[in-house]
Image (cartoon, rainbow, N blue to C red; front, side, top):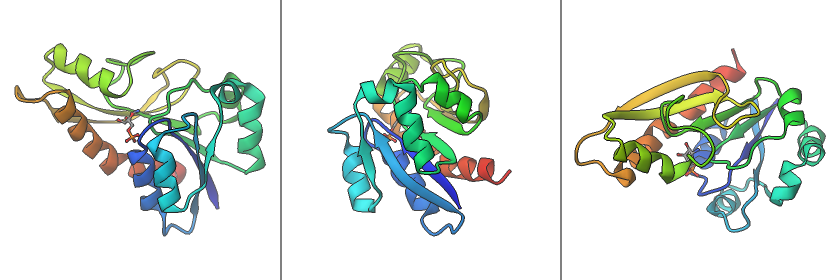
Length: 188
Ligand code: GRF
């Protein structure tokens, strides 16, 4: 059995999609979600999906040893970041080399880095009058959004799009591809 931990700080719609996708998979188990936000909607989703959601403070999650021991004690094999806003401590990156995967809602290396997350990304893309955006699924290293890119998919931006409509297009791409890319990485 492959055990996955999902880390999420926000609404958790990608987390939900991943959990639903792997629900009947006999080889993949979503062990739990970890969040750093006490009021994140992902906690409600986890309750409805009957998946444990562990809440830890930023201080706990930034400490090398704390998070690593939670992951190792629970025999976690893969870590999936789905809208998770904290940096992953270096000790965990070393222990989980090429086993931590993030999704970013733009075509990296553009529109990445600290502060560029969620709607901030889409607002920047729209205000620069880009004609396309997309998703980037990448390995996680010690810097925000700089790990090797595994997969990208694009969408067009029309003149009538705004940050909200772009976010919807991006979410559709995320729901379509993120679980499949995770599955193919695990079984490659
Ligand atoms: C997604 O667009 C993801 O790419 C980004 O943050 C957003 C999280 O959305 N990292 P949700 O919490 O999965 O609904």
